[in-house]
Length: 211
Image (cartoon, rainbow, N blue to C red; front, top):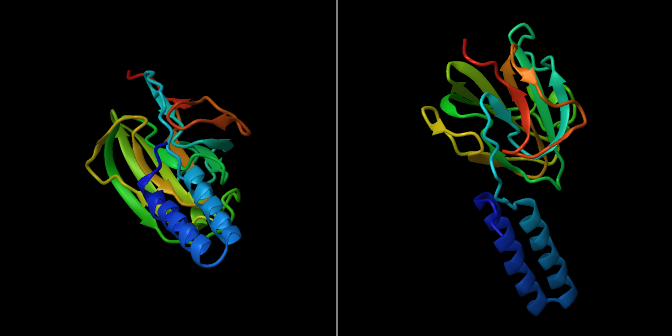
């Protein structure tokens, strides 16, 4: 099973400690640490996906449950110009992050912040996050990797100028988090609050065709 590279130190470290503890201390402790290695293996799993290809489609950047679908709650994105889809990732969801659209990365911005529960409406503004702006045929699409109360590190593997495709892996957030996607106001939202989505598979919005 493929796992994200960010998870390898956790899996290998827990497995090594399990062997050492099992030999030097007790079998029970070794078994407990081996179980922990299994938890890390599960958390950092990176399953293959058949990426949805559809004109104008904006894809879910991660697995999880939709908590916002419509008017923006983020203060930097006025409702006259933007719509927002927020996805809450529980600890059992796949945490590998994928690009929502094809295009060119025009900006990557890191915002230091707090570690409030990711389901709070103000977490998108107050928590630590990395924001990626993508130029999709002249239309901007923005995706935020936002940490939660458990997450303490964002891994973002894209950079300004990169050419990307919808569904490309670009990062991971460690141990619980949230992702916000911002699309132009004319986009049609395709999901509702409470819906379950799959990264690179579920269409969460559709951009209008070029005039």
